[in-house]
Image (cartoon, rainbow, N blue to C red; front, side, top):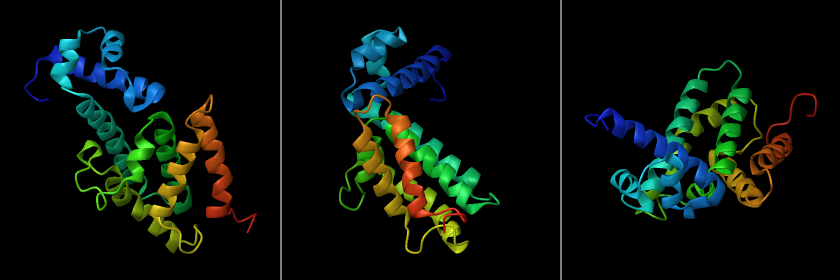
Amino acid sequence: MPGQRADARRNYALLLAVAEEEIARYGAEASMEQIGRRAGVGSGTVRRHFPNRHALLEAVFRARIETLRDHARDLADSSDARTALLTWLGAVTASTATIRGLAVALAHSCATEPGAAHVHCASAQLTEAGDPLVRRAAQDGAVAAGVTITDLFTLVTGLALATEHHPDPAAETDRLLNLAIEGISPTPQTR
């Protein structure tokens, strides 16, 4: 985007924000025309930034994945490994609940789908980001023996898919995650 005019950068950012909202509401089949209308731009502007649905979804997922990766890095030096892991896992869970299609993207791996460029192998990127948090929590005895980042992504994906049609998927996913956490990492009072 460097070198673009200021109005083109603004349009891109606005389209990306509106697309994220529309994908949260309608999933990967969100209407590109509706996204343009809500952003107040014509279909030509939408197509200049996102020539097809694939490019739009890729941009939305990439932005969310980068945010989650940055969040994991920010939490890596936290003094409480359990809280750091659970804070990050909560953010991943919230993202999968509010960006319909992200849960499915996490369920696919680069190994089984080497051409999965549409999400740049979200599962691999988030595994790389979250694995240090899980390992550190394990070293501190803050998670049950044998829990892996893959286990946690399977749990998050299942929760997101199970609550996708709930009236408030984010709240329900968060409630179920908190319920499951006691099995993943019981607090000292419940051990």
